[in-house]
Image (cartoon, rainbow, N blue to C red):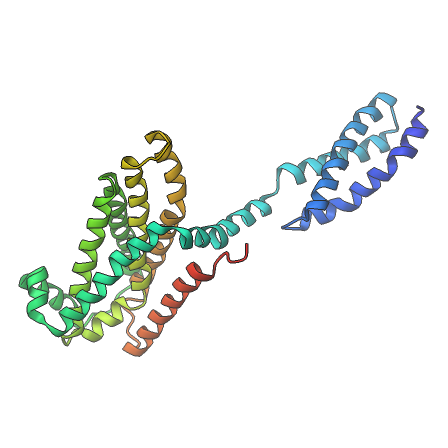
Length: 315
């Protein structure tokens, strides 16, 4: 084969790859057919570059092939946009779809929210019930904390508060998750404890003059923060239960597999905790009125439900 015949036979693939590359470099997603065609052309042109060097083609022809191979290599191995797309898919499709299928999430959310609302209702109508559950001194402490007017708060205070809330809430979730090592029972117990304690405190405060203050402080971030507790417990229970019921797997393999399965719940808990801390720090002290804060609480509740119930459907 002469150099002239080689150029004539192979130039069509070079032209095709040259036409494809601009689209490949811009698009976030690629059809499978286009990916397969690109793979074939990239391999062929890479081989053609070696042949061109052996044939000692003109510097212009070799430079063209070198440019095509270099750009093709960048498309194949250096596509940060696709990596960002993979992260977006994981967050908005994989995680909510996995949460919906996770039976441990359902159990732990029920373990938290059912006692929470029951204790809140009982504490709202009966102070003796609230005092019996958490103690009179605790009730008075929380009442004093939320009854008084808050002074002016500076931006630096809000930033510092956000860091404190993140550390505090993450610590709570880590304890809930870590107690799963007690064959899952520890996570369930701690979830139930928090549900009873928080429900009783909030229900009691709603029956006192501090009602408007607790609503103003907690309504916006509560759906995120409380749901994160149940999700952390679900991850802990999943890993804990596999210690006593690994099935046909070794316990080490069971822990490894269940840890991967628990990742969506852990990620969701961390995400909700992070957002809740910033809302609590920056919107908690803001007092535009109880109705506005209740509306914000409704928005965060709808966002939580929409993310977990609608995310990733049909994928």
